[in-house]
Amino acid sequence: MLPQLRRPPTAPPEELGLAPERFGAFTDAVYSIAMTLLVLDVRLPAGLSIADIPTHLREVWPNAVSYAVSFFALGILWTGHQYDHALLRRTDIIFTATGLTYLLLVALVPFSSGALGEYPNIPITHALYGLNLTAATLVGLLNVLYALGPGRLSHPHLDPRVVQMVTRRQAIMVLGYGLAALLAFVSTWLSGLLFVVTPLAFVPSRRMEHQLFRAARQVQAYRVHEDAERAREDTLEHGLAPIARR
Image 1 (tube, one colour):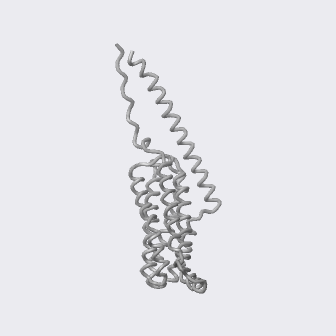
Image 2: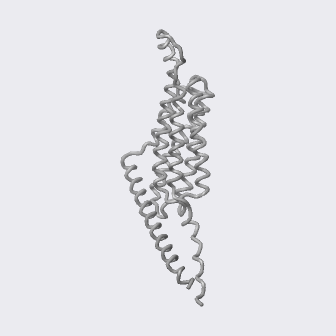
Image 3: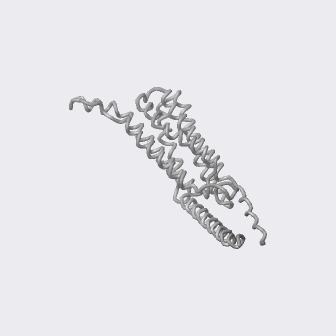
């Protein structure tokens, strides 16, 4: 009688986890819905006469500006999120929990943006909008810091300069939106200007983009290697199983 084969050893924690594509797809869905909801606050009342339309167009102008600024901000954040996800080889429960908190705050932007567009000259609406985006970018920064930490969810030898570049851009956005929220009680004009300028810090230069692409290819190659190794181990395990039953 042949001795029973031992169970294969449990994979170490750094080899466990789920592929990031599912969470990335969910993130895309939340962003697309939030960005679509923004436009619902830009509308004219029904039943206007032709003579009244120009007056009401002027009244809806703040809503249109708030919509454009918020759409641009969320679009920039979504683009950055795509770069971040390309650097991941897996996800875990901590990443998922912080990611869901981040998306909760992203989904709140249509509300704070609508309040800003409806009451554009009131400091509290500027502060609300600024705090919403400050909280979202801060949680996003914490999520990235965790995910790209050494030996966690990315390539084990990911270039530290890439991590610094990604986190620095995110930190600038946190500071920019936080400052805008504080300036709301000093000058709503300066606060609004910061809402327009701050997302520009998240737009990568061509050099930064090339660095991110190289790092993403490195991570993807590592994932392919990991998948091939797991497939080989599974083949060996299943190939030996019939022998053990004889």
